[in-house]
Length: 241
Ligand SMILES: [Zn+2]
Image (cartoon, rainbow, N blue to C red):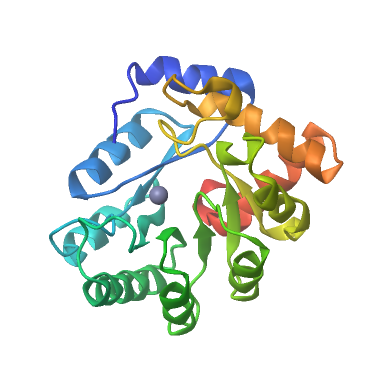
């Protein structure tokens, strides 16, 4: 994870652009701590406490539980499965860790933010094994058959700048078909750039690039999209509201 630079400036630019709430996801304990510190300093920022799937060490569940008790923590994330990064732990190790983190999220009544590369089948099985689990498929990049499967499991689809890239027709189709009450937007900042801003670090303010295209694809106004996205974010990440 890169540094955000001057956090005051980054948060200020986002708020000026109309992005009034942000969640900074943690990939390990150190980054989760730092995200939480940022959230304590900025009323617009909230934190996710997570453990990235390619981490070599197992998640420290007690430490995650302690951090997640903070009022500013709205999610367990980023967690998930990454079977495409060959440097990560074996499939069975990642899957066992994910079950532990899902159980913790259900116990804490927090939603999860899920990273998925090549683990769709195992993810769907793991979600099914944890009744009461809710969450978002972060940086959703797959086709409609997978989208439908996760929506049927009660999950939200979170779209990033990828959708603005002209080659992504299948993903644009998912954006059009996504149920109105399951659609979320994100930046994955500093990654996940929109098509017109490649080569610069992504920023929360640039969510507007994605939002503008998503509103156009769905044939609604930007204000209409903002309202529904906000309602969905509040419904899932309840502590944001
Ligand atoms: Zn991710």
